[in-house]
Length: 110
Length: 112
Image (cartoon, rainbow over all chains, first blue to last red; front, top):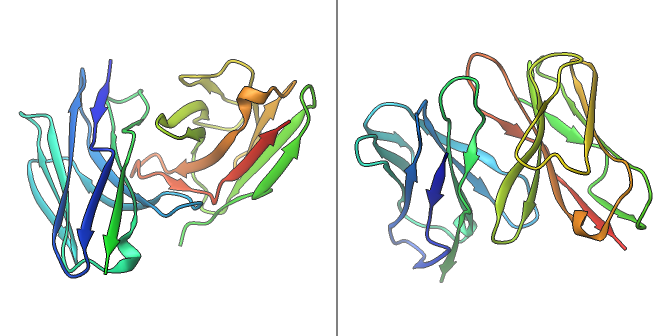
């Protein structure tokens, strides 16, 4: 089976850096996705990691360690508009579907 | 840009009614998915489809059915709505090559 854990809530200050962790236990692995979801809206794709290491995309970076079953999303130069939920999703082996974590609700304060 | 649309943003129905939720994508994606999202439970997969007229049960298919008569359209049907089906319903699509799922805006369904 699959099990994904994320912190429920986090708070950070505008301009700061925040790291959102995701740990997973799966019977196989084909990649890890991060999505952003603003309140009342649909999730939007942020990043995809399939190999170990850091993927950088502007202010957002995502890191993966397959041996540790661990990923994090790093948000730099936080802006108020970054207040949202961040969903970690694991893609199990071929033929199985995504498993989404419960999401981390990030509040960015002035 | 991928566009996934859903027929309604908000819907209010009564217990026992038959409910249709429509989803359309314009990127010729093979795969389409229906999820529900509830506080504290995250996204849970109801049904998915990898091709026209194909359907597979997800994690929580009870009380739901689906239809995929055309590649671009995937419908979710609640045969007899119940109050525990009050939820946010999200449709997603993906191509067979990239696996990245693109979501529609969601339908917030309330069953009274």
